[in-house]
Length: 191
Image (cartoon, rainbow, N blue to C red; front, side, top):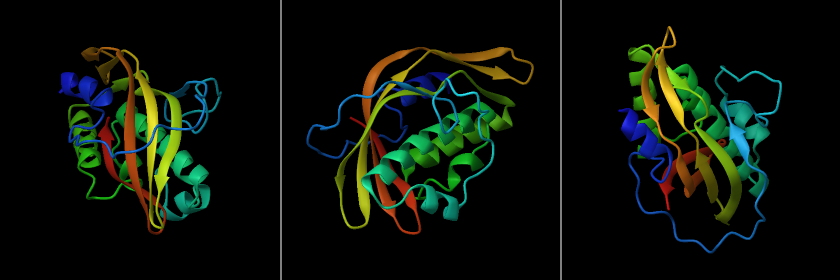
């Protein structure tokens, strides 16, 4: 499973990858890399990672149906996904995803397996380099992110290393979102 998670997290962040949506090159300038560690701010923040689940109302309030809202939602989702792997708690991402998202379902399954084995990710899941909404419709959005995948380990409850994920090069990744009561990931795919 650890080899899958390493590969899944980089060029194939999703286990159920399909081809990425076609889109024009992003127009936004690259931003400073942000470590995604489950907090809502950068890694240099002193705040502790969130271990509570987000409500539908909270997500709708924090991330309106705008370009900035879609980009912020994907950033928050990656933070929740990282924290879910770090705490082996799949409930942390359930409100962010649509049940039809096969990649998301796979991640929930992987996290559930970690929990059953009393293991979790130690380290960063990804480092977010850039996030940009590249297309939108009346009910949805496609957000492209660039991520770096640092080396990380999986450990058990006493800190014994049970698996290692090697670092992988920067890769683009796409999230297709729908907005009903709030943004939800309906598809995730590597480029």
